[in-house]
Image 1 (tube, rainbow, N blue to C red):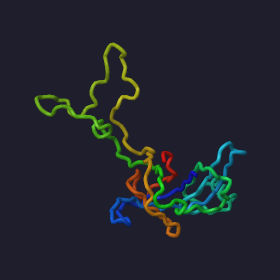
Image 2 (cartoon, rainbow, N blue to C red):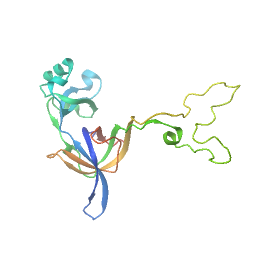
Image 3 (tube, one colour):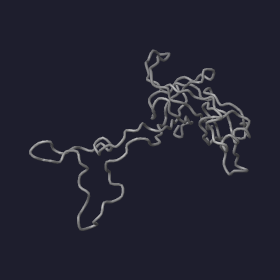
Image 4 (cartoon, helix red, strand yellow):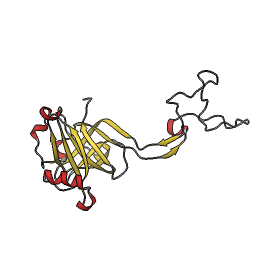
Length: 209
């Protein structure tokens, strides 16, 4: 069964397992998320729920979104995301989703926005090699050849060049849930995943189990 929840990345630490092994974990404030809208296949063509996460004052919400929250009868939320799940009909508007929907040992996929690195060259951005540093080379960290001069007389699309690095959606698959506490709304996920501290992440049931 597909499950999903929104969370906030808090940072990394390490914990001891029952067998004495030490594992690195990422701490996530997972939920509580409230159902704001429900979509079913008979009406909308697919099953999904729209969930809200994070507190925010009414004065900081636009009028259309404020009306959307009041219609659902839920408090204003900072983030709104639509999550595809199998049994959307079993959820009700206003219902809370907490971290304990996942159990220790489950495999999950975590999606987030990677850290921004600013403008970066090809060595940092694409892991290219530098040129020789001696014997009057004068070619050190540049992108390299742009292509032939006569034919095709252009630079092909997709050429790896300097540019803006980071701030992209990245998904890390098959991470293991170490702990999930629904009362305190936190999860420990084995390993690392993208995003800065305090950034929004989406945790879903792994698609490659």
